[in-house]
Image (cartoon, rainbow, N blue to C red; front, side):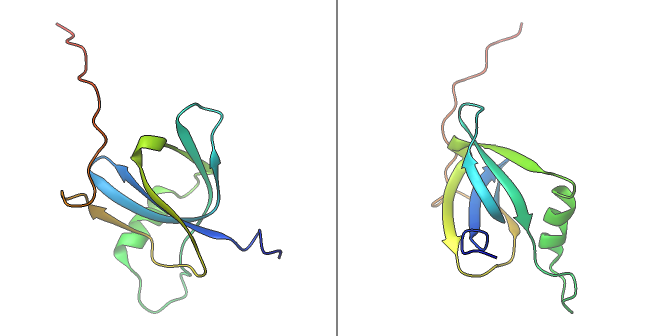
Length: 109
């Protein structure tokens, strides 16, 4: 396994009022304008004695997903990390994480 294959990215992004923290082996700018592609999600080993319910929820949500497209304005941070951490979902409560302002939706009346 080359150094490039061993790279692990920690991607933090906003999704429906929650902050997702995931680990993946590949990320890149998408051909779809304004999106980031996340591939090869990495989760902790299931052989551990303690199982984190948050990580299991994420594992179930991304099971069978080959590639995920995340809007660039939803990305909070991307880090290259030395070792795998615990994937998690947390509530986006004010403070340091503020959603990008979007234009109002047109009135459909």
